[in-house]
Image 1 (tube, rainbow, N blue to C red):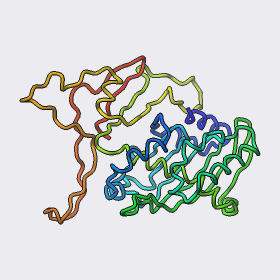
Image 2 (image 1 turned 180 degrees about the horizontal axis):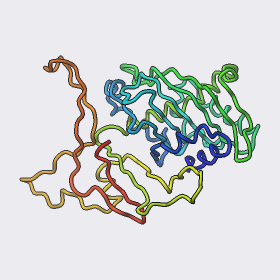
Image 3 (image 1 turned 90 degrees about the horizontal axis):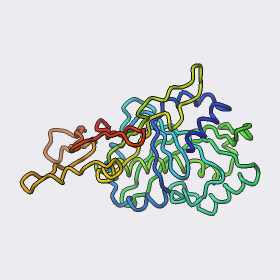
Image 4 (image 1 turned 180 degrees about the vertical axis):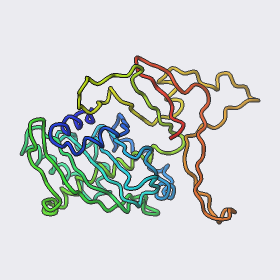
Length: 308
């Protein structure tokens, strides 16, 4: 996984990232964003996303087939898209541009420009990775268009491999880079937000899996726990979770007189004054899951997180 490679590079060259990587909650989506996101875009409640979006954990790593991107809240219990969120993004320069080119419109960079940036990196260096740090703020979906816009700042960027940091850019150096290159560096953090937004609807549950038996680090080891040693999370619908874990569907034993309650993930709901409430307020809606929610499969324990 790219996350494991990021851990190794941080240990060798960027130790200031180690505390973040030790506490991060790792999410994995086994797909390409440009294939997944357009299919679900029409189902977004844009007002809900703009005002009620939350990261499921204070520090989240979202890995897909294009990159791994860490997202961090700037304040406790942060709600909505408009506040500042920090990011650390890593991609390989040999990543197929098709894996992330759907977000081109969101950053104002064409697919051709993004491909040129990638080719420039690859031509100058042998199989390096690009790690970019910065923040996004004032993110929102435009009414009517569904277009995600945001203000982004890249504070540092590194081209590196196992052996060395090949090039390092601080914020002053980044100001002198071509706009197309800087915008391309902001592309994956925007996409990571969109992935989380589209997977955060109540019909998707968070499935956690972790070693059934704890894998102990060697005494004195300072290595960051890798993906096989820690909890991993993914978003799935109930039917997919039961299929994956071999769980019986609760509806198999139900009758017409005892229907299955509507399953939903825990989420926030806005109650509006114009709908008859005394004032606008945000309330939590409890999760509803029917039947078994935990099982050990091939040495990993899986459980549906009803608290997230």
